[in-house]
Length: 105
Image 1 (cartoon, rainbow, N blue to C red):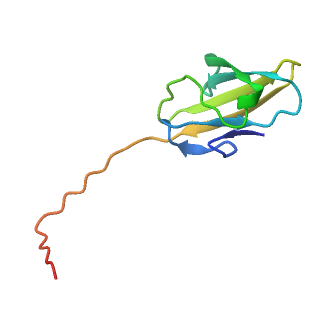
Image 2 (cartoon, helix red, strand yellow):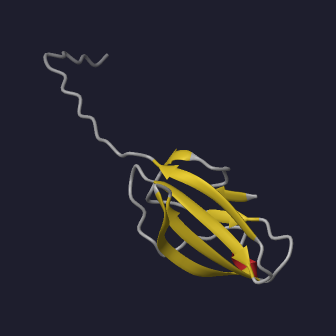
Image 3 (cartoon, helix red, strand yellow):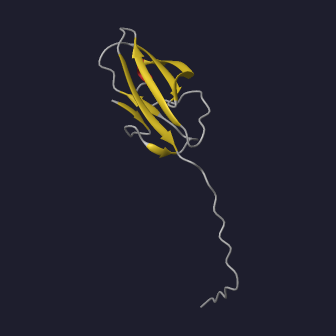
């Protein structure tokens, strides 16, 4: 039960605010590993997660927009779970409106 921003394998999420959570059935020490999903053998980040933090935590990693990530959680007993998520692409749209007459009533 691995979740990112309280969702299972979300797509298009805000890359500036990513929170992880998972349910632990056994173990008291956990390790998160983050990979680029396109190159699953490329480890981007690794971090120990204490048992008391598993319900909601952030990692010290600068995510990028438009990337699909794979993440795994392993416990000190050799169990591992994996999931993925994809960050959204940020874009800014400017609307130019001309010749508008605004009237106050």
